[in-house]
Image 1 (cartoon, one colour):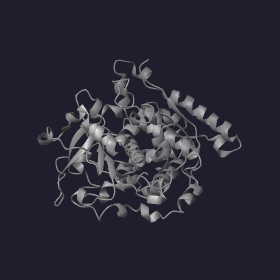
Image 2 (cartoon, one colour):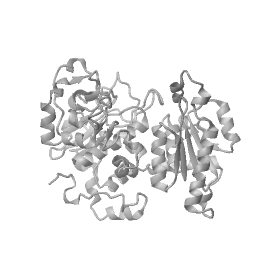
Image 3 (cartoon, one colour):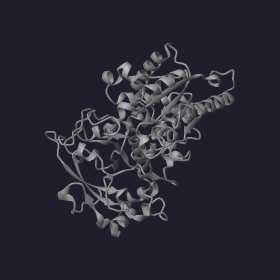
Image 4 (cartoon, one colour):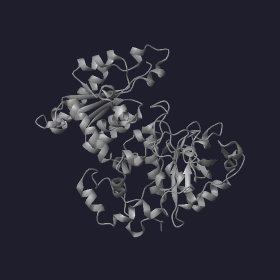
Length: 451
């Protein structure tokens, strides 16, 4: 019999019968005592200076560390929750830590619950979910300085973790993350064994499998992994711990990176059968405060109280131009007309799906977001009759913080009737998933690159 933090209340969410946005899905959940989802049940008290002092001995937990930009971090945390679900552990979510290459470093860290409706997610999954702020003290919602993370009464704790990316890196390097430093954790990594590899017959690929990782968290799989020769390749980014062996913690399982994980395929979030999105990610809705802020922006953009149906277009260009070095930029990067072609396809699919007499069958408004800063680009957008949120003119960063131009774009994408994005952008990928699942809307991705 599998252990479950909810005991006999444990139920499985079936996406075939539970429509994500339906009240019926929530009513099904309400027959259970939702108080057992309260995070206070799974810690001894308020956040402490040592995580070990706050975890309850009768439970097992799991965490992972941040990776790259916000959308990638979101994907990591959804994969984490799914792995927790598989292994019957309680996930502890780290905060979003700003990426230097996306929004800069002088930005406060942002907690998962600052963006997503965490109480609703717990209810939808009928599973407890903690944040690190429930467990250990740190400088949450403050600007993170890796050289100044010390807090009076907070200890640096040595923690043994699994190196999911380390195992298949030719230089035995774990994925580097700011999360351990933020949480005052000194981590020693042990590479996961070969049996955790997703595609064992293709050595260059570094993806690991959900089932392989879940097996490490059971006694037999753990013993096998620690007996494998690869376990001797433990390492740490902390010089004094580099040659010390601290086995991966059993009560708090942790991983360097859960981005490159799949059940069947590599980059599985691109596939409709990916279980992490289908069972967990689709239920991670934005919190009411962020939704209302997005509504106020949409009312200003459209100039009316009632927000019309629209097709959202995400055009990622600035950093992608680096992949076009040595090529003609105009031929390498997709043009506005390329996006326009797919906008028309989405409009036609909506018309066929809902009928021309339905409001969804005759969507004409198009709302663009982009990291492009060329004024001529935005002049061309206006010439097409398309609208956009001018975050500079509206003072978004000044009034709400540097996270918010991207955060509001993400919410605005998700609320569209249809979506057109940029191929190879995870922001576009996840936006398309939300529009598909939450509104039954069609989506397209515009191809680009060297011909």
